[in-house]
Image (cartoon, rainbow, N blue to C red; front, side, top):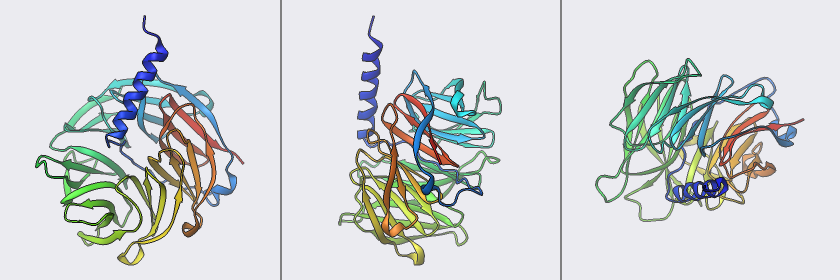
Amino acid sequence: MINSNIIRTCITVLLFVFCLAGFTSAKQHHRITSEDSKGIVKLINPAVTGSLMMMEIPVCLDVLGGYAYVLTDKSLNVVDVEPVSEINLISTTATCANPIGVAVIADYAYVLCPGKGIQMFNISDKTKPVLKNTLGGLNPVDCTVIDNTLFVVSRDDDSGTGWHNSINALEPDRQSVKQLFSVDGRILAFDCDSKGIYALCEMKSDSADGLNLVAFNFDAGKLKIMGALESISADVNSAMIDGNILYAVDSSFGIFAYNVEGGTPKLLSKLKLKGTPCDIDIYSDAAFVCCQSGGLIIVDISDPSNMKINNKAVTPGKILDAVAGGKLVYTVDDYGVQIVKLLD
């Protein structure tokens, strides 16, 4: 009989190789606000307060209404996360092979399937999610959610000469995809708010090192290249917009903060982080950066021009994805689900 530790080690190695190949988990963010959200970094003393080991290695997660929706390389898993000290697995449902992202809106979980499209699961019954539809015609690589709309990056490399990306919008009550814009290059990371979309792009026409920030204004319906992003490299793999500040994570360095007010990006500060930074989520005046073996790094962003490391949480495995809200951060590592509580 093959030792279970050997199996887990092999799976972990495969996951690491998969990440090195440039396929990162899709990032989605539900911005959660509350009365006690101010000054959250002053409360931080992180500790893992809930844990669930899984047989399959998680890729990413979304959290909504007391449940975590955890994606592995072959399944969608619903985890009851309330109370956090007694989290448990509710159901496991097969998905496409090697999905890379999940986002939840109302009663649907949207699973990104590279080369195949988007699988839509009805999750009104948490014990038995049902695949209702697969939206084809897309090669999804990333997603984010704002105002109950799913925004998806689709990538086309059929030409063999580079990447062509488009950003598409999908509303839950309309099972169809609307293309908002396309660029002749690679969208490496993006996020959106109520004003529009901000995409970090490696344009094919650019000969110099660096990335361009491309913005799409919802009201005007226009696409604009705002300008080059200073210092950051093409190793960027996650971004989040917070007011007029864009935070971007570079896996070879750490976190960058740019002021995007006025239409031209301006570098405010950058902060070196240990490990391999791969995902970011923001709550109040704290940024939570997943740094794989480096743990969950908590960054004080109360002054974006002077970011500081506040603390970190260590989980049993390499931390891959995080969703923050209130005084809890829901994470997945290559052992399972880990809930970090930010204690007073």
